[in-house]
Length: 362
View 1 (cartoon, rainbow, N blue to C red):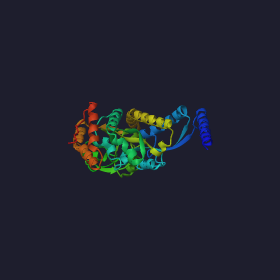
View 2 (cartoon, rainbow, N blue to C red):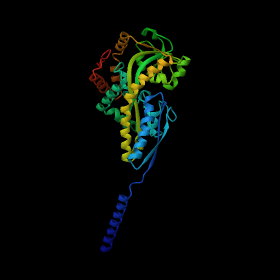
View 3 (cartoon, rainbow, N blue to C red):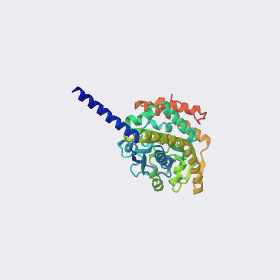
């Protein structure tokens, strides 16, 4: 009995050794992975989506093919083909999309605090600078990144945003008082900016903007020039006033955590690295889009003017309490609002930027 038992163990060991030898001789089987990636906005006019199409998708595809035994294929669904602007977070959470790019502005409850740049307008005017500041805030406040994983089953791969915000209108105006009672569309978190001017804020989305301006549902849009040009808003609303509310890094590219967990580690690593590259490219591309957008609006016949510095300062002063109000609101929701807004204001201060009116959370 003993001898037979011993012989069985020896046979098992030999078999295991043979299997191990085969594993060394033949690498793991190559797999092809197919992903669904999408956004509610179209690729062309929206820089953050354009970078998904021109940077993230091709670079992940290339690097996986060149650096691993695997290949990947993306089914691209931009412009709301699978999920609209207010549904993309949920589409990634449910697995309807493996990867999604969206603006946090359309999740005013779930991502209330992630919209913190909106809560301190008139900040630095360059998108690359704004991106560096926002990354600093995320690094100092891990809660912002962990929220996506803990609450929504997804990994934040990279941040992006919108270039510098200004105001387009269907009719000319020369003073802030002229905006009294004018209905103005916006993404949501930026609508309180209009309170000082006495304008009537209207929650809206980019895909709805052209028709709403054309039909008079509202007569103005808080919008950065790249999309104001790309969506041709200058046709129904040709008056574009440079105000400089600032660029807002409030967009992100995320991945479904279950999708990521099923992938080999080398493929996961490439996706993370390209996501970081997507973020690095965003600020620079948004600055370039601002320049192209303003030039394109002039060429298209839009009438561009600039808000006088005195009016801009008065507008900023009218929002002096806004960051503190929003920080306390976030605190009351169980979010680290005061910590995040303080980090943001300190990160801006570290750049030497001179606010038209210095904010305080007191």
